Every structure is written in C-alpha cells, then in structure tokens.
Image (tube, rainbow, N blue to C red):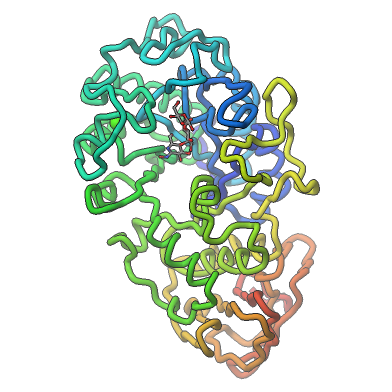
Amino acid sequence: ASAADVRANGDAIVHLFQWRWSSVADECERNLGPNGWGGVQVSPPQEHVVLPSAEGATYPWWQDYQPVSYRLDQTRRGTRAEFVDMVQRCRAQGVKIYVDMVLNHMSGTGSAGSGPGSAGTVYSKYSYPNLFNDGSGDSYGYGDFGPCYRRISNWGNKQEVQDCELLDLADLNTADPEVRRKIAKYMNTVIDLGVAGFRVDAAKHVQEAHLADIISRLRDVPGFGGRPDLFHEVYGDGTIPYTAYAPYGGVTNFDYQRAVSSAFRDGNIAQLGSLPNYGGLTAQQAVVFIDNHDTQRENPTLTYKSGARYYLADTFMMAHPYGRPQLMSSYAYGSVHGQGPPSSSNGTTLATDCASDAWICEHRDPGVAGMPGFRNAVAGTGIGSVTTDGNGRLAFGRGDRGYAAFNATGSTWSRSFTTSLPDGRYCNVGRGAYDQSTGACPGGAVTVAGGSFTAAIPADQAVAMHVGARLDGVT
Ligand code: LAG
Ligand code: CA
C-alpha cells in the first residue's frame, strides 16, 4: 500500500449489509465517494460456516457470525483478490472500509456440523485447525475456549456474559495472550491491506482489558495514516453499561435507536432539538442508527418497510450533531429471520442491483443521498435556532453553515424560517444529493434573503441546506 495519505471524506458510515466485495467497490466509485460518505461497514470477510438449510432459511445471512478461520480466500461475497480490490478502490474515493470483526467466538452447534467452511476448512465446534493457511500452524483447539463452555443464562452476571457462550457459539478465551495474538494477527492482516476500521461484533461479551490489549497490538493504517478506527457493538444494560467500552473507541447506542426511532414513528420529534447523552454516551462516543441488521428483524420500530417516515428519521440522524451515523442499507426480507441476500443456488451472493426490488439501498433514497454532504459541510458546528411547531415538526441550524427542517406529520408544513445561513440560493439536499461537478440539484432550490426563507415542506419530508451546495456560484 502507498504511504501517501488519502483524504477521508467524513464521519458518516453506511453498512452495505451482505454486499459482494465487487459491488461495494462499484458503489464507492459511482455513489459513496462522490456523495461524501466517510466509510462502509462490510459484512465479515473471514471464512464462515456454509449452511444450505438452517432454521427455515437457505444460506442464512448469519452464517457470517460463525467464523471457522481467519482466511480471506473465499466468503459468499467473493475472493481475497476481490476484497483487496474493493479496499483500494474505496480508499481512492476517500471511503474507509470498516470490517465487521467477529472476535468473541467461532462457530456454534446445531446444523453447522463440521463444514467445510466457505474456503474449504474442515472444522468442528472448538476445533479450527487452519486459521491462516500461511504455514504458521496457528489453530484453535478446545483449550483456547472457555473457561465456561456453556450458554449464557444469567444476563445479570458480568462474568457469565463475558466468559460463557452467546447463543452456544464457541467462546474464545481472550484471557490467553496467544488467543489475543491470533485475533490481532488477523486484524493486522486486513489493516495492512488498507482496512481503516472495525465494527467489533459482540464487544460486550469480551472483557474490556482483553479488548484493550488486542487494540494495543494493532498497526497503523497505511494510506489513511494513524490508528485504526474502532467502534464496539454493545447492547448496554445495568450489568454492562455502554460506557465500559468508551475508552476503546466508539460505542453503538441502542438507547438512541429506541428513543429516536419511536419519536419519529409516533410523530413526537419536537423534543429532539437537543439530545440527552443517551445511555450515558457523549456525542463524541456514540455511534447512532435508526435501525441495524439485528433491530430491523428483532425490534422493527422503524425500517424501510415504514416508508417515508423512516427515511425522514435517517435524514435527521445525518443532520444532527449527536453521535456518528451508521446508516443501514438492506436487502428486502420477509418473515424468516435468517433469510439471506439474493444468492445463486450454491449460496454465493449475487451482485447488488439497487434498481431491483430485492435490494433496498436506503443510502440512495432522496432523503439520505445528499446528507453526507450536509454533514461534512457543517462538521464542527453546534446546534442552534431550534424551531418547533406542535409535536411533529422541528427545525435547527448548524452555525452559519447549514439548516434543516423536518416534518413528521401527515400534512404540509408551510412557514418562514429564520436562519444564520448567508443570503443566497441553496440546493435542498434533504431531497437528493447535490452534484458538484454538474450542478444538478434534484431536490430543488431554496432562497435565503434577509436571513430567512419560506418553505412548504410536504408530509414526512425535510428541507436541508448547507454552504457546500449553493446554486448561485458563491462558495
Ligand atoms: C451480534 N452482535 O453482537 C450480531 O450483530 C448478530 O447478528 C449475531 O447473531 C450475534 N451477535 C452473534 O455474532 C446472528 C443471528 C443468530 C445466529 C448468530 C450466529 O442473529 O440467529 O445464531 O448470528 O450465526 C445462529 C442460530 C442460533 C444458534 C447459533 C449457534 O440462529 O439458534 O444457537 O447460530 O449455532
Ligand atoms: Ca466472550
């Protein structure tokens, strides 16, 4: 990898759940880079179990959360060469790749059997003989797991939550420095390829000190430079709070997810002008989302299936300074929890086609596409000029760099808004991305004159303007 530093776009991350590596690479070039996305969370690139039939699904998506080695050679999403090509092409667009890092466990029981895995490794629960296929002989055997060796039953006991088995998945004994060395070896392998960050799966189930030691073993990221950027998947509760993981990176804020999703669902958003430190996490510590791949199936407060109101919540999340947005981008799914992405009959994932009904591609929605640009333009500003009108309507400014208004009701919101934006003509990026190279603005123009503008915001839509998307040529 080249030593030259690459400019990263910004802090907004989109989760291209289950996308093939080659499709992610194409999307970085045609959409994510130009629209200012800072990162893509990709599904785990480690070799995983292959389950032609399990719990009513063929090749369920959750195969990925049962790794059987650290080999990148072949997953349902493509080959190692395709993975490397993706990392490089996204990086050239200023888009960081975040690897979904499964380090708490390996495979489970039940229909997983003994493989082979997606890259050909023969394994069984507690026995993974060929972790890297690099001649090192690195492997995991029975003694590398435990010390509990049974399913978590008492979720009120921290030690049990961290040392016993989540969903019967073979729980790595991270108290052993050799186990931590092998986990860090894999993470450094992808860092050396240019991967810039990690979503740490099930972080709450790994003792904090063990995680800290693994992180201390990581190398700097070539190209982007500096330390790898981690965020930890923690379902905070009274036993293990979110804040336990804040010293080690960002932390997923499920309290935000529940509160903000239900506020939008219920049309009760006027209170969201300022946001409390949900779950005790500060704005800088929190990673925020309206839904993710688990909540959309298990606790679907608001998802793409909810229509315009859902996308409005995404627009809000991107416009508001609290937290770092992690935006869900899905494939269509029905009632079977494990239903996998569009796949060929052998279980390999098909290329993404956002024009087909099988892929949702939330990040391309007109309510979302222009918002990384907004976010990047207002970075560093606070929130002010909060305006409300009943329970379902809210507007706020981001210093003198941006302004956004949200209408979570069933009727048009027409009024005049006072703003600190300089007078001029702005593109409404709340209804489509502004294309800097062509000047195209699908969302329509809004004119600020004498420190105010008038708008008629349709039901369940937003207006969002920023100084980086002016239509009058002023910059
Ligand atoms: C996560 N974060 O902490 C992931 O976001 C979540 O999607 C993962 O569960 C979980 N933790 C483990 O990494 C998913 C599915 C589970 C699935 C699991 C392992 O939601 O349903 O469990 O991945 O593949 C499956 C079966 C279970 C079985 C288990 C072990 O559904 O019935 O006990 O495999 O064989
Ligand atoms: Ca554990």
